[in-house]
Amino acid sequence: MVDFAPSEEVAQCPSYAAALGYAGVAAAVCLSNWGSAIGTWKSGLSIVHTGIKHPASVMKNVIPIVMAGVIGIYGLIVGVILAQSINTPTNDRFNSYSTYTGLAHLCAGLCTGFSGLAAGLCIGIVGDYGIRAVGYRASQITLFPSDKEAAGYSTIPDQDEGGGGDDVSGSDDQNKLFVGMLIMLIFSEALALYGMIVALIVSQHSYSCQ
Image (cartoon, rainbow, N blue to C red; front, top):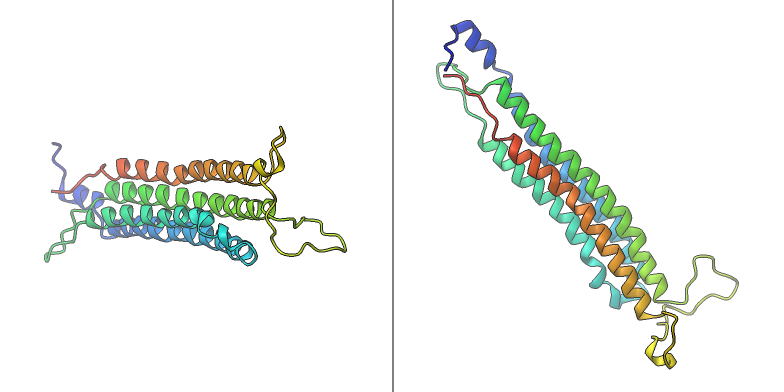
């Protein structure tokens, strides 16, 4: 280990180094919760809108809400790990927390926060349009209604009730739309997971002043 002079040791571990670490904690938690809130907001509005006349689909379409909430948990995990890694100065005003460690924690927080924000935006938009599409397909309501309005969300007959055939309609189309939306949501959620994995690796990089 290289021995530093007292002045060089202070330069490596200034008093403001802890501010970098706590900024990483705030970025991880706040930005992740921001993305989670946006995803819940967008998907929740579409669930309420669709559930007015098609209440049977509410519990099935609640998956985007759950996936948006998990993004906030990613930020919470990284924030707790980073907060526990910040060393407290001693009573004689000696700080062992270096700028290298603070910048590493700031990078980890930003990776988690911005990844969670992007994932929340993606989940919110995909969930919004996906849930509405499933609801519209389960009804006779059209996006461009004519003078004759459809009376509620009447279920389209399934393919089996129509005596068979090659065309897909009813619940088959609803399931295809739902599966497609679910795949898009899974890969959107993976964006936040990638950021958390990188953050956990970067948070292990540290240098402590002796």
